[in-house]
Image (cartoon, rainbow, N blue to C red; front, side, top):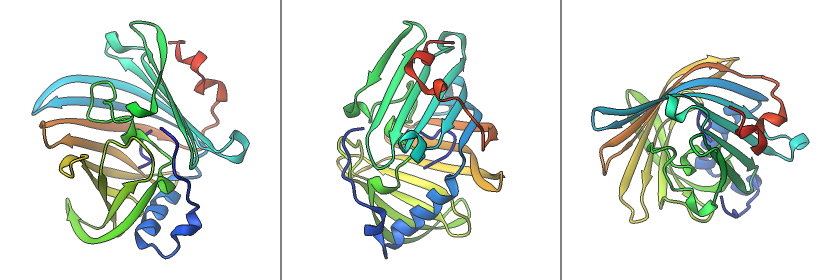
Length: 258
């Protein structure tokens, strides 16, 4: 799911051509194509954590990303930097994702001023205490799943096609997810995540889509843990595409430069 934030172990590699004739894959590819060809992007975001209806913390973020191309080894790179509150200012997450391949992540904690690499086996861990796991924040996910078309559904008044998605990579925190692809436009309305026991654990609702440089981009998402009643919202703003960003920005050395 390529939205604002939106950002492992060895993956089973299956060429896209192998999915020809799979309607579930075709729907996912249409959304992936809409999210592609942005070159570089920047955006602002507010990430708010709730316990029930109570706000526990609100983070102000700045996000940067560059798209994987042949020139950079088909590696999509993203950086999320915390601007507020004061005790989190400077904390940053750097992610490198090789298309159809491995993912590497590094977390810089401003309070310790140390950079640590996040193991692939930790992809189901929560990001900064939120309901987003590192796995939820992956970007280049198209060929990392198997797809099965289930049927139609209505989400917040939008008609969508439900597709069951099963990860082909190791260490996924989910047994499966069910994605609702909007029938009218090439974007996602909702994702339901199921734990290893097959029970629904989280529901992500995506909305407030607006055209940015002619492409749909979500400006709001919420992910709720239905087992704990905790949730996290993400409000995006100032989304800019076609940005030329220095590759130096996406290095571990740059992480420590607040």
